[in-house]
Length: 95
Image (cartoon, rainbow, N blue to C red):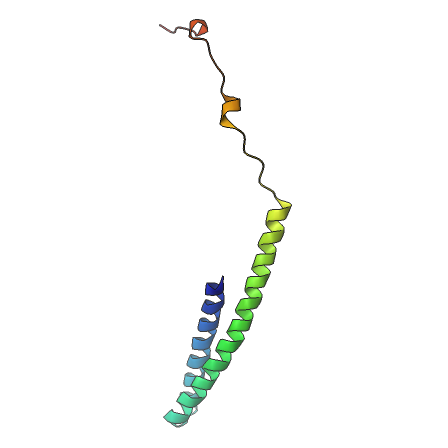
């Protein structure tokens, strides 16, 4: 389940980086300062994304556990119990 957590963190990190670059360029800041602030924003957003992803994983796992415990799967029926033996002499001939 760490894949979901990492995907959320990466998405949030790249979004923070992009927002910081666009805001820095729109404010006509120096390119080096824009990139430095964008990298800082990316790292901060990645940390926040890891926390949010872990929280989401715990909530999903808890929901699945509650769902499966409240709706148990019925026991499988043995296929041999449902077979009806038919005497070939008693069968109906449709010819």
